[in-house]
Length: 394
Ligand SMILES: Cc1ncc(COP(=O)(O)O)c(C=O)c1O
Image (cartoon, rainbow, N blue to C red):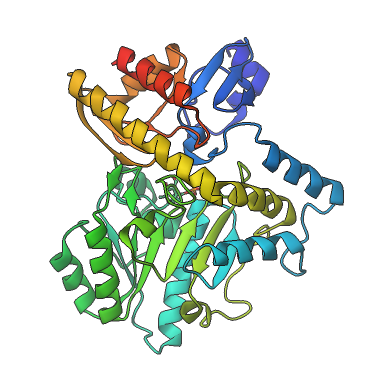
């Protein structure tokens, strides 16, 4: 066992991850600090979670105040203020009328799929149980979410998964129409940007076409904004840019400032089908996480903050565009706001490993796409520095 493994007890952790690099003991803004005192510029944001970077004062204050109350958890048998206030904030700032809180992105996917089936039954369609998902999709690792995730290698060891999921191709209107024609589809689920699938923005016109097709077929439209929701693409919700709203939306990663939390946002039309006892989760919307989330949401949702994200996103688009033109190892650059994919010659994992040695934390999105997810609070200097390191490494 290495000294690092001994000091962190990591040999006792289930081997489903292969964590790289040093042991991190501190963080500040966009930087993580190792046990040895080395500083790393973090362009992963804990996989799109740390939108406000490390040590955000508003989130820390909210957590401290929640701790001081002594009430970390009550369960949903009882009422507490933060969950209600957070739900009201989300309703005021979205298409939704109701919110269900849970603990992760995958759990939000499960909730959305269950709510869609419950709604179809309430409408008298007992046979409307199927789901249309898309090639390149990622919705989580639990049985229902994995069934809607287009990753045969992730699925194979765990078959059989939830039945009735059909995969269509983003952009293929006729393909979706054919799947909906059978009248068995309860929900169509899509990420406005397929980040895990290689940072693939879905054309806005296709999102609008899905809205029209779902309405015609009597199916619900679910947008998975777990990775791109809450400011990542330059608007509070990615789907705003397509001028279309879903019936349900899943949100998670950046929602609670680094604490685990997910949410399903719904219209009243769908919510009306859900009765007490239909669904539940012990920890969902607890006062500690909801307090942190309210602080994070208020900060991210501030119009000035979002304007700054949009300004920086243009800078990123320009710098990465220049990188694509000047660096022969770059095949393509694509993304939106502050989530970008750089498609490279050869394995992206090699680029990520070399960047780590150079002090820049990156991750992959598929075998040859390097994923860039800086905290939304990154400064112009930090963004330039990270992209310069990537250019050198490439
Ligand atoms: C679009 C999307 N949906 C769902 C999930 C699952 O979220 P979690 O890992 O919190 O279960 C992810 C995770 O990467 C995601 O990117």
